[in-house]
Length: 355
Ligand code: NAD
Ligand code: IPM
Ligand code: MN
Image 1 (cartoon, rainbow, N blue to C red):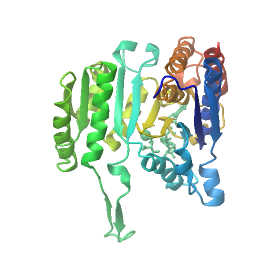
Image 2: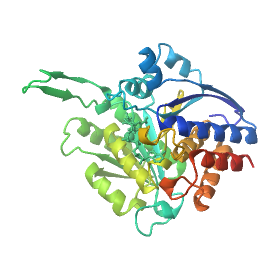
Image 3: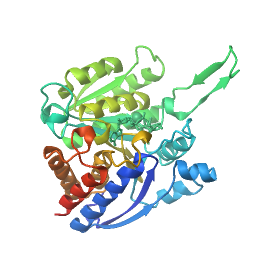
Image 4: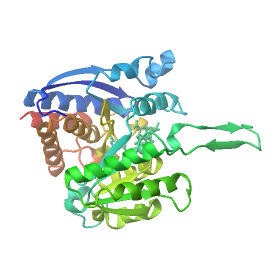
């Protein structure tokens, strides 16, 4: 991204449940940091989500992806509504956008911003600062398969795990390039190649090939089960982790809890050549929706990632500083031990990023 960029067009999709609550605060912070940093922002909201789907039957309208492509980035809240138990609308909107815009990198940082938030004993900020790159367009998520003899005692359910050379290669390369650019010296690839002897054999072979191109990065392989254990035992040993879609989904919730909980974890769905989408790692937590108790920091830190991605490094850094200030001063929602409401946290951050 060019350093000379002075403005950005951003699409906002609040979605469902607490997605709406946290995106309101993220938007506040975005506007405030934009005004303070002289970033001309053009924001447009899209009401894609459960409500619209239940009313009209439309989840992601025709032409939506083409419209998204005209934006510099997308900021999403969360999707999921108990009235739509099969998550059809979310599959169309969330996975539809990940696949449709070819957002093949799911970038999920796991960083301890305040030591009191870590559930592990005696860990300091320096003991937890890693980045997980989850493959985001393939694997078990492609929705290939079917059910035969449904509802009978003989029924068969098949869900295919799709791994392509192109897909595996590009996520691994992205991880190594990130390591090189950020001066990280350790990259771990996690798979289950001892059992998934076709799909993850491909991961093994491509990993060996690509890692030889990055001799300055120490490459290591771990089976995913061992990796989860090591993430708890000694997370400080990891700098960059690359894994497949399904395992990445699971270990990023684990990572979220290590940094203080789902409420504070942020992510980016990246297409390095196109429009990328940023969102908190958490879901729509329906039981908390509209109650003013959801933690908006995951969404606010997703704004940080978005701005950093677009080249507004100073504004992004400012958000992180102020988030750390709010954590240190205990100005947090109750999941992090504070007694602030969702909007009080948003107000505090937006006031301070603008100061
Ligand atoms: P969830 O992330 O919505 O919530 C799990 C628990 O984490 C909550 O009960 C709460 O205790 C805590 N939590 C999550 N976000 C929080 C926040 N911002 N502040 C405070 N606490 C928070 O996961 P779930 O309950 O498994 O799923 C609910 C719905 O969300 C489902 O429909 C699921 O499919 C969907 N979902 C969507 C996304 C997404 O849109 N990216 C991600 C995960 C789950
Ligand atoms: C996430 C979520 C999604 C996923 C669901 C809601 C489809 O859990 O973003 O981590 O599995 O990717
Ligand atoms: Mn998840």
